[in-house]
Amino acid sequence: MKTPRKSVSTSIFFALLSLHCASTLHKTGISLERFRSSLETKSILVDGLNWKYTEKFGEGETLPVIHGFGGDKDHWTRFSRHLPDRFRVVAPDLPGFGESDKPEGISYTQEAQADRLNQFAEALGLEHFHIAGNSMGGGIAGIFAAKYPNKVKTLILFDNAGIKSPTPSEMQTIEMAGNPSPLLLTSPEDFDRLISFTFVKPPYLPSFLKTYFANKSFANRDWNASILKQIRKEGYFLEKELEEIKSPTLVIWGKEDKVIHHSVTEVLKKKIKTKLEIVILENMGHAPMIEDPNLSAQIVQNWIGKLKINN
Image 1 (cartoon, rainbow, N blue to C red):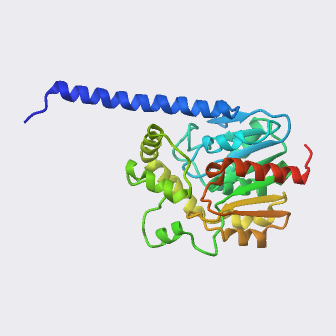
Image 2: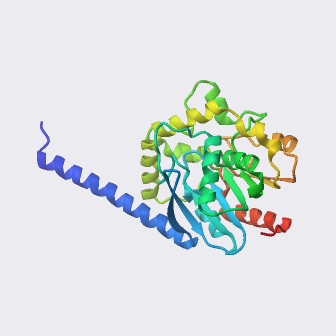
């Protein structure tokens, strides 16, 4: 029995309307979150690439914050809200991610992104600042601190990549068995599995936002897989650069991280020669600044305040 053409057209119409509504609600929700965190959304052209970023104005300390693999600038939105107004927070979408340009045929290794980040900082007139990063973004921030030591006041690492963990993580065990990376979705419905894998206590997401992020993540799967392949080929680049880091370093790690095992902190203890403080958070996953933004911001604020570093 053939389905009437009118019914098919009606179904397509409501499906498109639903997608449009989900996108509109997503934009409204994100805009509200940024507003509550006193963040403005901006863009800048750097070496032919358009960068999107958010910025919270402050007259004191400047803190660029770098997202992880598959993430974007809004991974730091709630974290920024809990920092005092004196902090100037700059959260970019790295090229290849979020709303920034995604040209094919260029390198997306952590080292290449660290060099681009230097160009971005120079374009914004940032000269001497703190820098924080999570996961891949932590690897990039660490490489940045090693390559451009005179620009970094303090380095802040959240569950950073770029170092081989003495104890394999659950993700490494899965990948070593020949299975696909847990970071790549097999379908939109796989999004709940990814959230559970990443967090101990996942942040609340309304159903429309969850659906939007699930569809978006799955749509970007092949692109993200190509970037992940480059990063895997690059190897543990940050580990070779650790002794070049001159700035005081704060490491924050979720003890229940399944993506990168907290034993990486043992490597950091051995190889970083400057002042180092490590905070292991119980019942916390791979992205503490998302899972508990208030606590994460408090730890960072206390660390910077304790060092009494002047501009």
